[in-house]
Amino acid sequence: MPMFTQLLVLIVFGSLIIWTICDRVARTQLKTKSWQDWLLDSTGLSIQGMLIPLLQITLIYQLYNYLLPAQQGCLQLSPIFTFILSFVVVDYGYYWNHRLLHRGWFWQVHQTHHTVTQMDVFGTSRNTLWASFLIIYLWIHALFLYLLADSTGYLLGISLTSALDLWRHSRLIISPHSWLYSYLSPWLILPQDHARHHACSVHYYNYGANFKLWDRWHGTFYPGKDLPAEIGITTPLTLTKKLFFPFK
Image 1 (cartoon, rainbow, N blue to C red):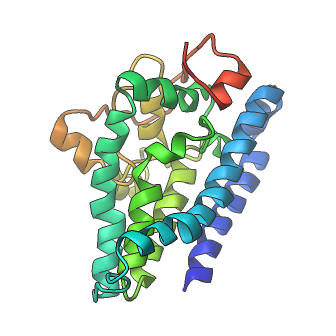
Image 2 (tube, rainbow, N blue to C red):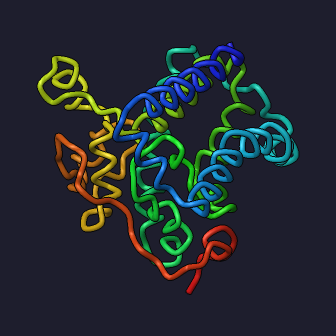
């Protein structure tokens, strides 16, 4: 099952790259991306796709083994419940984590992610190199993988969340006139919804990752059926500061 969950993310990532290359507008946008942006994006993808999972299954897993030696595998839960735990409950925790990243000192760390000026799959993980340490996924996923006797459902939830994250950062939108849009739009964060979060004037809306429910509950939902004309923020930070020390 872990192999399948990794394969799911790779298939979605590869499919979105192929679609991006085949789409004329998306392909044109890629050609205009600067080498600094390519460096930020490729570094972020490498960290999120390789370093963070490695840290979770080695150092952080061992940290929990040291702190909670008697609790390894203590949670006997069904795969359906652990999937809901990963895909729904943790998603709500991420909603508040994301709101925190838009406040004060945390925003200075998170702002590099919002320098993305075009929605494409390569910019999904653009961030300051150590920003992942401020995101609950790093800590909470390793904790539950340590505590759960059977992590199959939980891993599936992680992979589906990662696949959706790649998709919602792309330009592959669902037509507002399609039946699929009418089915998914009421509850799922779509690319056009997340693009509104990245829009210059409204980046403080649509904090949810998987579900719109959290934004609707807390009054932070901003509707939109199409991609906004402009996204991203401008910052005087140098490339080095964006990568390592994003403070003025």
